[in-house]
Image (cartoon, rainbow, N blue to C red; front, side, top):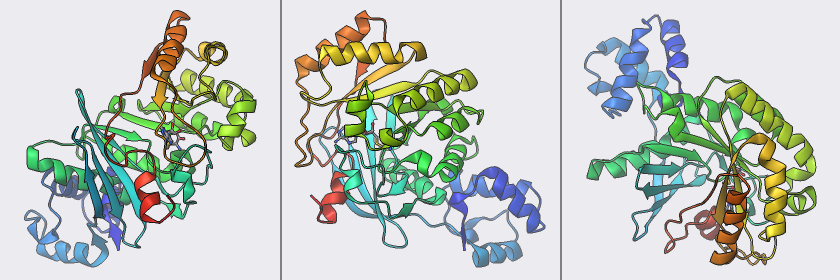
Length: 345
Ligand code: SAH
């Protein structure tokens, strides 16, 4: 069975032609499944009965189910979703003043092995299908519909490395960006990567206006390799030129994410090194307060230290922000809920 939620409009059009249907059938189906939220083929009244039988035989409309749901005082919703094969992934909704931001997982577990991150406690089991990532949004929208709301922004910053699941993530972006599906504007979508140079270059050539964030977390190879295993394979002298190529091709600025870890990467010396490193890429910095989750010895930097670091970067001409925090009263840290569920925390 082919899950219709996993198909871009272009792919569905091709399939409809193969089914000896008109291309328009694909648009009709998109209208039913995304605009009208219909999950039963029999309700699709403008599609002939005989073709509805074909659809029922070969296609399905399957969404993940909610395994656990946590809701924080600030409105943050964290779901542990269960896929058809029992795999579980986390999805989080954060209510910013400018919209409802969903943080989508792209893999079941993660193999990137960042030493501070709870997601990597569980090794990658498999990639998520496009339909499963779309499913993360569908389930969240089902919850938000009760209050007449919907997901307006998407960040691919949940469990997994999106560029280690490139094709499925790209199809997912095409679907959520499609006017006939979720119509989420490209500038409201952000993909975050730990830094895989060839995929960063490829992403720059897709002709998408989607935002790119790079998890940097350290301003030199020695420290970055300690924090992020990926840096041993792709050190800064390979990462930064790839980012430059991305900017040249996509014509978009990037954001560097930088988790502030107490006594590890949070000194003004680090700030200086960071500014020098990224200045040529004319990028933003987003400083992230660390969520302490593991017995790994990492702790969040003090408030004053974070702000002194930010002031240094601002004074040296680098646009810098501190990430707003949500859901502090629930297991909001990356991978925390699932790791707990599976007995790893
Ligand atoms: N693999 C991708 C996307 C998933 S991680 C990437 O590396 O970018 C999304 C972001 O959350 C990354 O910047 C990651 O370093 C950060 N993160 C992981 N664990 C965290 C924690 N405990 N507290 C704060 N941020 C964390």
